[in-house]
Length: 164
Image (tube, rainbow, N blue to C red):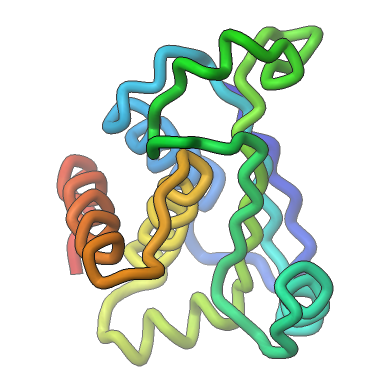
């Protein structure tokens, strides 16, 4: 698996975010039985940039904690079978499945960790697990979809022993 991380935010985090991001992305891929090595891009940014991106791509002019940009269209979440039919789903040099991009707003992540009463490690891991599920076709537009995502997020994090 390749995890490309771009740190746009000026203040460094006080935990090994690269190692944690890699562990959570791998755990999410394993949890969903992804049969391929995958490539994911992760951008850690600030309030202004995530608000601009949210406005540009979702037409929502506000700061958010995380944005997910899946590269694949799933008819059924985590059904990777259709990827074989389309060579553009794979990196031409590495052969890895191009799963998509995750953008995390560091200040919002830090604020949420404090307001929810758990550490930044747990909040960061949660946002990655949540976004990975989006990259694999899950959504939370209905209560039923939200329940599925919440269960999967919890199980991924529990498997890594990352709890509140």
